[in-house]
Length: 74
Image 1 (tube, helix red, strand yellow):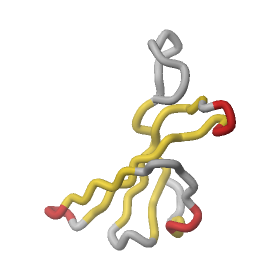
Image 2 (image 1 turned 135 degrees about the vertical axis):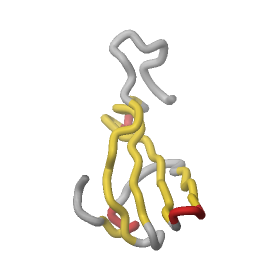
Image 3 (image 1 turned 60 degrees about the vertical axis):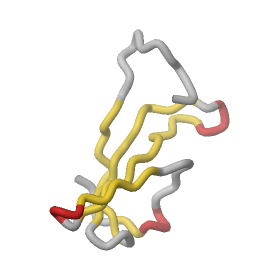
Image 4 (image 1 turned 90 degrees about the vertical axis):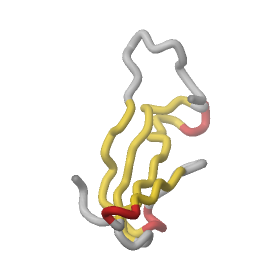
């Protein structure tokens, strides 16, 4: 996993943060942009944090197969 990043270093549209109270951990899910201008993405990445300011990651959590039914805006 990559070094810690400040929240300001993570660029993403429409991120989703999942809090997990049992482990005092937050997971930020975000699109992994290939080319934001044309709507294509690589899939989705996840970052992990304990304080909502510094994040570890990205970890790839979804990469579509070559024959996946969608090619953009998912």
